[in-house]
Amino acid sequence: MNSCLFCKIVRGEIPAQVVYDDDRVMAFKDIDPKAPVHLLIIPKKHMASLADVTAEDGACLGHILQVAAQLAHEQGFSDRGYRVVNNCHQDGGQAVDHLHFHLLAGRAMQWPPG
Image 1 (tube, helix red, strand yellow):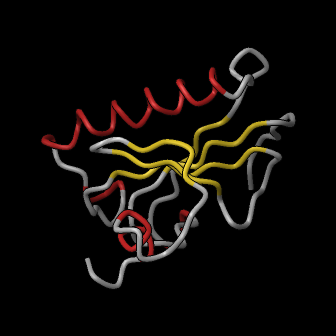
Image 2: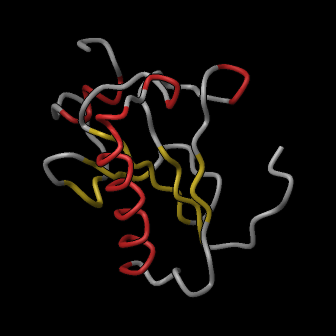
């Protein structure tokens, strides 16, 4: 999608602090962090939300979770713990209409999240 914020980041039209990049997935620092570590992990293929995922997207979703675990290990917080969050649509708190997962770490997480 031409006007999608995250698609523009994938295409390099908008700068981001990228911490991971491969042929299917990109991860970068959130510009409004809610924890000491707050990364966004996105598929490079545009999908508006989790509600738009098809069976064909299953491998990509699995890869996103594997990347989350890899980043947690590489950045040294996998043993203490972290949270992976997906917000779906307006009532779910989704602010950008491109599927993305938040990787939060560096402090104890609260429950319920809000």
